[in-house]
Length: 174
Image (tube, rainbow, N blue to C red; front, side):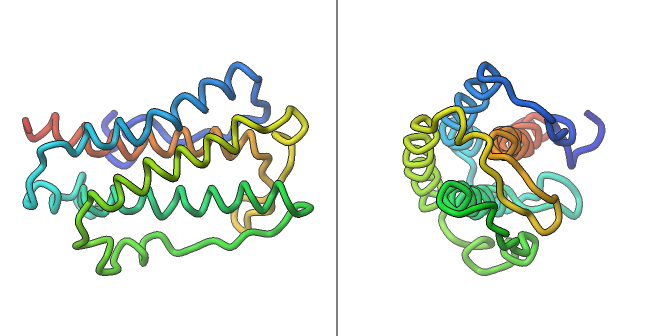
């Protein structure tokens, strides 16, 4: 794609998610930590500091952002499963990406955290019954989302950010 912001295309919210599509999304969520680790393998400090596009985050910030975002999503799932259509909090991801831990911390901490988080998240997700996938939460900006829709979003989200890094590597010949 010519738009470096959306290397796999922008997310399109599905109105329905079939059980087969849900399994595909679960497989993507499961593979995201491995794909991210492979995408950043052997990148030195200078390469990790390189933004994936002009005005974009560095590879290091992308790694840390994935953890920040997926931790938030994990909590949103738990809230929707334990409360009646809770209103979730958003967070300012751009500001979080400018905090010292996102700009300078060793990526290994976030890679390990993402691996652990996804194992725990998948244990929960794979235990859900059909009716639970229809549970909802209210997102202040996106409106009501079903859990199956949020799963689709986060499968896309992992692929989206891994592609930022892999596409940069390809463009730079790394």
